Image 1 (cartoon, one colour):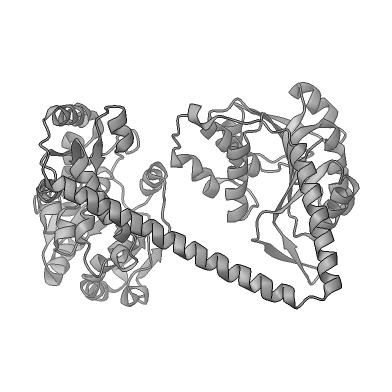
Image 2 (cartoon, rainbow, N blue to C red):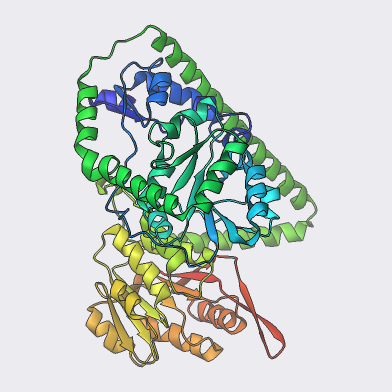
Length: 554
């Protein structure tokens, strides 16, 4: 806010949920996810030139704090949500579906008894599927209930996934309280654009858009939920009519293509309003400053306490050492410090001014973490993406690409950077699927051949040395050493070498010997991931996975 004022800029504050009135049972309130932020949020709402909220109920509440509050309803981005033809699920059963997060645990629990009675009544004809969290125990244990805690942080990825589901009936229960009344009707929109008929709680969130019996059904209590669901289960024609009308409702009134200009005009009109300063704002300003000061003091006190405990433990441990051990340890630390200083003095890093970047990062780039066809653990996938995004290689080479999964992760990280970095993939027998190569070919070149024999050709065509090297080829001791030594002539100072499957014994030994042999040129930055996988080979349990990073300083 201070930065906005210094540049004489307007400040818009957007609030999506009534965080001040979280019910006591709510997951976020029990975990205190927002407790420390409530007062700063309250102050920000007061100071903002314009406050935007998605519902009229939330506007009524927030207007008491800042009268210049406007409603910007949630609409579906029809670039992400494309209406599809109505379709029956592949199952012979009627599929009732629910998707949400753990924050809706109590909402689902409020109708769990009604759902169980319904499932028992229809025996094997109806199935309940839940996505996003583990449901209440009574539902978990029912034979006709399946659930998956899969949760997409990326909204585009979620939209793509949800449109691939087959659901006959959707449900959206909400407990009747102030917090839920201020929520938007987003579940109705997402269900309806996929032409799924739904049953919704009869509160303002939904009854403002759902016309009971026309484009959805409304329910007030457990008996009402049973009755509404039973109607839809037993009447195929009713399901079809409601689904079509629900979809038409969304297409007519609830998409971006229809409402984008309305959003814009609402914002512009709101910013043109004169905001009246209330004396109470000076009071809340002072309270907020003191509150934030307290939060910082508590954090600093905790850090100081932890540092003191660590120092005390180290001192106690040092006192146990003999005098000669202390001298030896001191000499080793001096040597390590000298080596570290030498390495730092020889660093030849390219640096980037972050102030010149846009600062925007679309989480959809991270979809590749889950979808890449690679034999990599979760930690390895995230670490590889992070390293590439952070180090910004100009010329990346991968020795051992197989299905192209690791290459796809690297490619998406470079795409997210809008980088002009190029990729060079080496494998004697690549098995990259057509759809994977289509996502790589704009910046990657594939070389079918053995390392190091083909590396000179690759380096020549690359037009320079490689600054990020990923070695995941022949996993024998000799093969790893051959690949590592073979790439050295084509690696520039300041480059990084990543070894995959460092927990595999031959790879670990070869990397250790490689580091020792070239210690005057290489700094070992260590193993970056701790997740491993196992496999039985000739009755011997073998470990795989693990990324180890080396830095080439001359």
